[in-house]
Amino acid sequence: MPNKKLKTIIFICSANYYRSRFSEYLFNALAEEKGLRWRATSRGLKTSMVTTSDGAISDFTAYRLTAMGVPFDGERFPIQLSETDLDNADLVIAVKEAEHRAMMQEQFPEWADRIQYWHVDDLDCATADEALPILRTCIEALADRLAVAEHTGRKRRSRAAA
Image 1: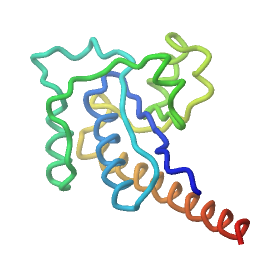
Image 2 (image 1 turned 90 degrees about the vertical axis):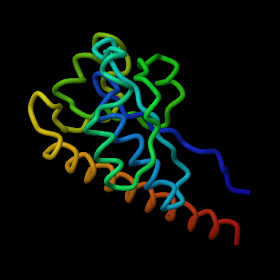
Image 3 (image 1 turned 120 degrees about the vertical axis):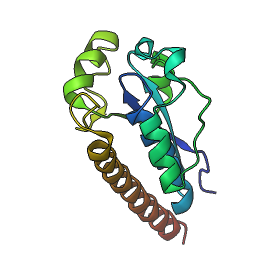
């Protein structure tokens, strides 16, 4: 009988307020649509950057997800990344290497070289209209790769069982 347990992806950004949250919700919508056995969560490396007066999620993220018809939790505030999160994840992706590798090295040195890094700018380097479409492309490509891998794995298992 195939393992039905869901695998976990963690998307990491600085504050868990904008890019990682967009990644989490968009990936989960795509995973459900594609029937993937993966679910995403997101965390931040410096969630103290966000105050309660900032709100729970970036307006840019909320606007873009709403426009795409992707459901999201607008009440959940940013969550700080922990060692337990890393230990329990099957895949970890930080959304901007130039920004997050040093933070990972400082906070989780044993993990800094074990995770994947993308290259999606924050608002200090790109507008949301520039960055979020790039992030969407990365997430869609990831979901497609995982779908191919799952399909290939199922075919191998069914041949082996025959």
